[in-house]
Image (cartoon, rainbow, N blue to C red; front, side, top):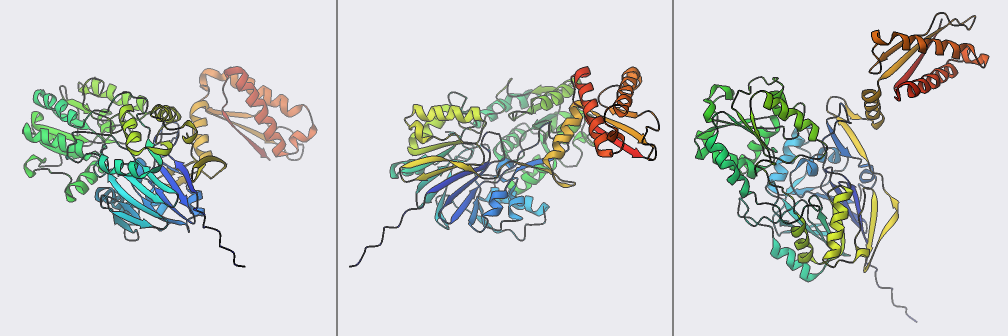
Length: 560
């Protein structure tokens, strides 16, 4: 008797976010099916005030390195740093083709050149609506509008079904380059059947629709027309459409444009070389010193939208720029949104600019910036176009993703088919069923200092601890033969109390330590480690009770 072979079982789809969920930035998604996997985006985030001495933060990619033999490609949705910033660190260990549209790959190539890796990288340009086969996956790039040129959503065909991964997007009906979001192709996939929609949640709490990029040009026009001094505009260096609109206004009002800031200059050169920017020669500044041109004929495009301490705008605000100074009547236009966590830094820069006599214009006063992310009505439109069986909100804090999940329920996506995930979790979709697995993969943050490389998380915690509570060093000298104190303990403190004004407190601390060394077990003065722990315990209790502070305590025992 012959037995029929069992029909082959379709491998389930596993969705694993490594970064970008529950946070703004550091976007990195892994899709696994069978024995192959693809990575979508590989971004970084800029550090906040708590991560002192750190230049960038990237995802912990330990799991990707463990399964690197199964990863067949990296696909990039667009060229913002929170989607491409960690690519060099990924390619150091995982040598796979990197796919993206021309501007995205242009930015990546420049980044890899800084790392000395450009010649080894396999960068492959995508074409819109062209399908690329990568292992078990077939990937099609679909144009979307966003605050950068060459942004795409990805239609990822897998054995389990089709994934629509939106990347960052909006539905701008009047885009600057006349290239709107590919609604027809998204609707086509919706008609065919979409297994999973993974959609941008950044503006899920904002009702209505996002504004059109053309609105920014309309807002800039009267500002340029009435400006009597220099115009300084700070915007994201990757926002090519915004830069083009600023250049266009300069042409209209016969002003010269200067580009200041390393990333601004590099991105403008890349975009112009690839044909995404049109800058007439006559509008370019003729020297490296913007201050030499007539004030009412000068426009300076500059980096520093988030108040970064080393950015050009921050240095100008602090009178620390080598070639640019603010003069009474100059206009500074902040044409960018404030990334959550950077409010204080930006306010600090704006205050200094105002003190110098600048007129500072920002989004709250004028429509000099519109968001590049879809608001609630656009998010619902995306769901209705694609009509997914399963839904995962991505890109945003928990608040954003929870609101996005509520929008999904409002348009009819079953609640049990919506997964609000966090980094490291795994959703497995098998046929008609999806489930959140109990297991997790490694995830977290890796801190990078460009001078010394990777910074351990414990070092960052120590820096934060020192900044908030200061430190205390207690030096205790012990006679090795008699095992007695040679002299009173010496107390050194920084960031906790002022030495001259707190002499009585320091004497009180010395008396406490002398008492601690003379009481209790005789082993205290015989074992340096026991004595260190005793000192640490006494001082910790004292400062917590006296000041409600937890300084870093460093006992030093000298055996003499």
